[in-house]
Picture (cartoon, rainbow, N blue to C red):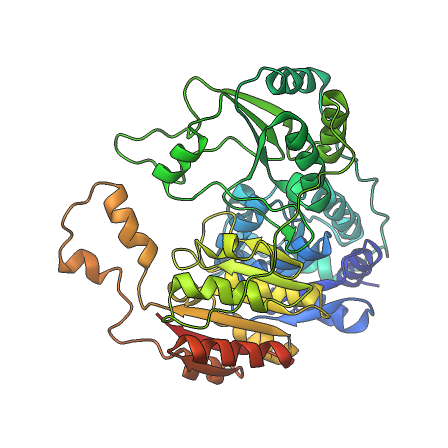
Amino acid sequence: MNGAESLVRTLVAGGVEVCFTNPGTSEMHFVAALDRVEGMACVLFLFEGGATGAADGYARMADKPASTLLHLGPGLANGLANLHNARRARSPIVNIVGEHATYHRTYDAPLTSDIAGFARPVSAWLRMGTTAEAIAADGADAIAAARTAPGRIATLILPADTAWNLGTGIAPVPPVPGRARAGDAALAQAVAALASGEPVLLHLSDRAVRNEGRRIAARIAGKTGARLLAMTANARIDRGAGTVPIERLPYPIDAAIETLAPYRHIILVGATRPVGFFAYPGKPSLLSPPDSETIVLATPEEDQIEALERLAEAVGAPADAGSAAGPRPALPTAGRLSDDTIGPVLGALIPEGAIVCDESLTTGRGFFAATHAAAPHSWLQLGGGAIGLGIPMATGAAIACPDRKVISLQADGSALYTAQALWTQARERLDVVTLIWSNRAYAILRHELANVGAANPGPKAMGMLSLDDPPIDWVSLAKGFGVEAKRVETLAEFIDVFGSALKRRGPFLIEVAL
C-alpha cells in the first residue's frame, strides 16, 4: 500500500466520506487511490473555489469534515476565498494540497510556490508531509484538528513522492477534545446583568443559535425580559414553524448601531463582538453603545448549550419557552415582482426540511424576517463576506443531505464568481433550485458608495458597479452547464415556476428579473 492509499484509507476510517476535488499531475497517485478505496465519494469541480465552498456547505449540514483535493499552490490559491468563508463559519475541512516531490522542489519548476504561505491564513492546522511512512498519521492528525471545536480547517500538503512511495496503512485518529466548559466568573457576570433591571441583549451564534440553544435562550429571555438577537451572519440556523424565531443584527451600519443602542449589557453566547463590516468615516468600528458592558458567557470554542443551561437554572427560567413563530405566510395575490413580494413567496412555498443557502445580499435583506414561520428548514449564510460562496455552498449541502431540497438564494454578481459549480450540480444530479436575483448590478456597492461618503459618483464609478452591458443571460449560461432554467419577469410567473421547480428533482435555475 503506497502513501496515497494509506492516507485515503485513514480519511475514510476517520469518517471523511467525500472528497471535493480539482486535481492535477502531482495528485495522480491520490486520484488512483480514491479509485481503489471504497467509502470515499469523489465530486469534481471545474474551479477550486467551487470545491472549497462545497466543503463548507457540506460541513455545515453534516457536522463533520469532508476533504478537498487541490493542485499545488495555484489550485489552493483559487480556493482561498471560500476557505476564508469556511474559517469564519467554523466549518471543519481537511484540505489535501498536492506538492512537487520533495527532491523536485529545489529545482524551482514553474508551478513551485509557497503553499504553506498560501494556506497559513485560513488554516488552524498546517503540515507539510515528509515521508510516505508518516503521511497516514499526518492525515489522522488533520482529521482530529478539523474536528476540534468549534470546527477548523486543517491543511495537509502532500508531496508526490510521499504519495507514491510505500506507506504504512491506516493510522488511528487521535482523540478529539470536547468543548471546554464556560467559566463561572462569566456566568456570574451574566446573572448580575440579567438581574440589574437594565436592558440586556443575548447575542447568539454558532451552536447557541441552533434550535436547542435558541430554546434555552428564549426561556431565559422570557424570565428576565432580555432580548434575543443572532449575529448578522451565521453558519446555520434551523428555523421555521414550531421553532423560536430570532432576528439578526442588520448589516447596514446605521441600522446595526440603532438596534444595539438601547442595551446596557450585551451577553455573547457563541457570538463575537458586533463590529462594522468596514470602517466608515465618522462612524465607530464597535457597534455596541460606548457605555455598555460586553459579557462573554461562552466563546465559539466553549460549550454554549451547557452554559445556557446553567444560566437558565441560575435565573430560575421556566422549563418551556412558550414562544414560536406565527402562522405560515400566505402567497401574495397582487403586486409586482420585487424584493418585498419575493419574501412572502419564499415564506409560503419553502418545503419542510429544505436547506436555504443565502447569498442574496442587497435583494434578500428582508427574506429572513419573511420566512420565520415557513415550514421547518435550515438557513445557511455567507459568513466571511467573500462573495462567490452561494452556488458551491448549496452544492455541498445537497451532497451532505441528498434527501432534502436545497434552495439557493443568489445575487447575480456573486454568482458569476463560481457559476461553474452549476456543472457539478448537473453532473451529480443534485436537488437544488437556484434563484438568481437578476438586477444586473453590484447593488450592494451602490449603497457602500454612500456609506463611505462618496457623493455624486460619475459614470466611471457607476460603470464599475453595473452588469448590464452586456447583460448576462442566465438561462443560456445554466443550460450550457447542463442545468434546466427559466427566466421570470412577473410575480405570477415566479410563483408558478418556483412552485413547479420545488415539486421536481434535480438542479433547476430561475433567473428572476428585478
